Image (cartoon, rainbow, N blue to C red; front, side):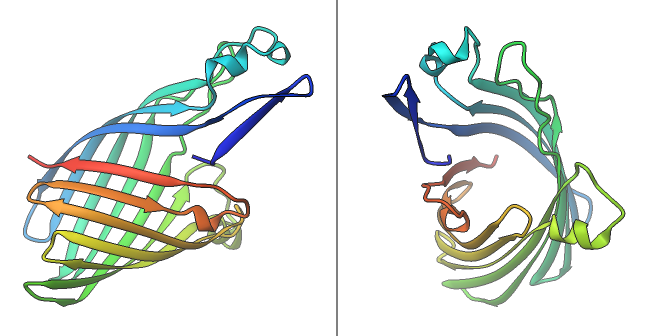
Length: 221
């Protein structure tokens, strides 16, 4: 979410709303050998841009919409270099476009390439420390200018501390030069057997005030 949006019409305050995105994903992973695994995920995306009452305002001239839906596929690969060093990659959001306005243009999903590396410098029966770094590239408008491509790549770095492999705390730093998004990020998680719940926020990376949180729940079977 980009925070609360206040709507004005005819010089009057008509109300406010918060937009959000929601996704449900089912994934399967297959271990190829002791070091390598691949994964395939299918997800349903629901994107709430604006409520119906906004489109009932005179300025909208009968336009209908406000909600976009799409299906997408994610493909990933994981490789264990050594016991405490892993690398991975994924191509995400291969799927149908989103259409927020009836009869309007369809917006393609942001197809992305992600490459990450994780290193565990310390681990015992109680404590675990992991250092992560990854880059994300939107696969749209790719050029031959390597400098432009590097600046258009999102970079993130972080560290995670977990205790008893149940509770985890994360802190990181995110860099998106062209998008003017730079700043600290954080997250907390609870992991019990095959269930994991996570809360994260990157609201400090924006140049405007916002409350941007991500909630995720994961169950493996």
